[in-house]
Image (cartoon, each protein chain N blue to C red):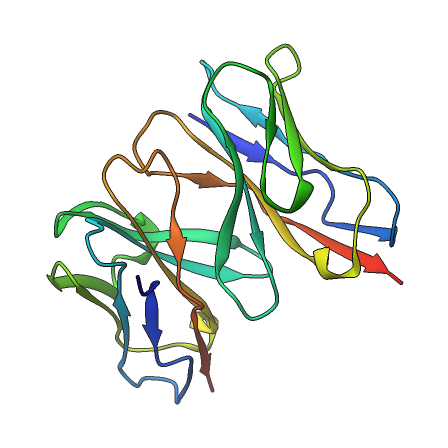
Length: 114
Length: 113
């Protein structure tokens, strides 16, 4: 089985641009998570979907961050407009509903905002 | 509320030495507990997990962890580390069997040759 696929692996954006990060979860998984990872803040939850329904979103990220599950096998994270403080690694993870916390992570998308 | 504390941001050990990475949790009941590892430029991978029963759990690559209810701890151990163990290790908990996990800040492990 293919693991979690994230594209692009690297993205450089100018301040104010819109960027879209993509994630394909493991086939058959119906839980999907977006995390932001920085050295200072560590891992922060951005969004949590179960069977395409939004279960939780990170309150601090609501205004410029929007995650969507267009279908069970594809999710996007849009950041609009980008700011330099958004520079981070964005990780996508998936699991099956009975996964008991065993998440499968993608390799991440590293975003640099100039 | 729940939280995970990893008191050591960075640990350096020599190859072949034993290792303990510390983890303390805060939760009103016994949570599900995990250790994840992140190798450079990769996502996180599950190393081991504890749900109930024997407080010592075995994981991949000869890692083990011991749950202590009295100390609210879940320390990770390895008898003899290898240079390839250099990575960031995250302790995490889930309040129940769903997949909503709360991560600690991570401990960077550096193994010196």
